[in-house]
Image (cartoon, rainbow, N blue to C red; front, side, top):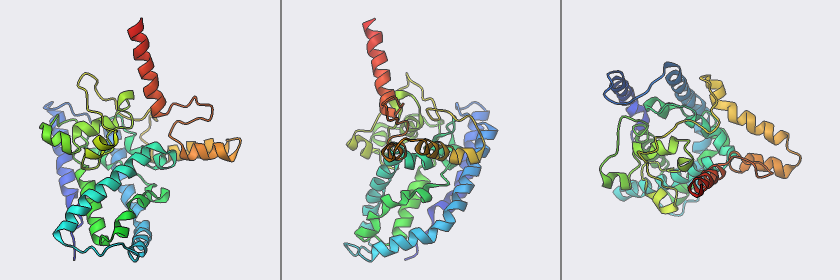
Length: 300
């Protein structure tokens, strides 16, 4: 069965929607912020993501095909298979995304997506150049193992990527409550891209926000606390090369300077910001620091 390629079909819509969002900001209909250098960097990152992904198509497809030989079930293209893989793929995405924030080795390939201090549709195109090198596709290997056809796996991943484009915007406020409760929305994803301590490492959803509600990583957007975008240590550059590789450089430097293998492994695989003496500014430490400051303020 031949299935369409969602990303290729959606590219014209991406362009039209970015122009519309830019117009909303230009005419001050919505508080949309674009910066030419920032947008250019995001577009270059998007093109680079496509270019760097091409050499890995054969590798990833070959691995998935090999795994599919040992599938647990023979799942074809029945209608229920499309429903089943929608939920299965989205759950895999949640864990891919969460692990990419919780472990520095994968964060090094994902951090570039968070590096913009603006939040608009062009930010959605600021994609990794090193995700395949880091092996992030491994999280999706249960799908061919369960028996989903490889074309269906690729189709579902494309649908997820296309869906997540439109949620990168400040032009859309809160949607009706049932939608906000079930689906990932611009409001939920703004939280995910924010550096406010209470928002750090929250709302990992792809399409369905129910996974965050289920696994305890959901935080709603608070109108009283506007989102501040970017990363904890802003890199202040529009250079795509630095955006793509700066965390890899810092991580490898830390590991090479470590006094022993255990510490080196910690720099590679513990949470971003981890330090062996416990002084590192991980997301958990930053949130704890904010809670302490609030408690001290209430006592004074």
